[in-house]
Image (cartoon, rainbow, N blue to C red; front, side, top):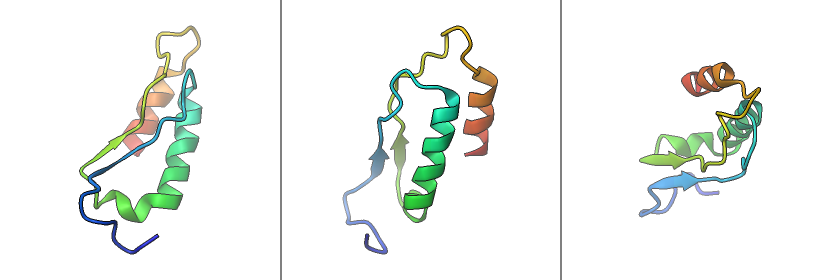
Length: 71
């Protein structure tokens, strides 16, 4: 990967979490930061996709909030 991303690339999109948990999101964010962290400050947006069933019984909403606040 180059030191700077090419002009015109404004954001990142990843969609790997269909019907996953907040713990899966946490692992994904850690991997994104490890592999692409140096580029994140160069982007206008990041789309993490969808698929979280936050209303599903047992979904750890508090963990989701902590994960997103930390990231």
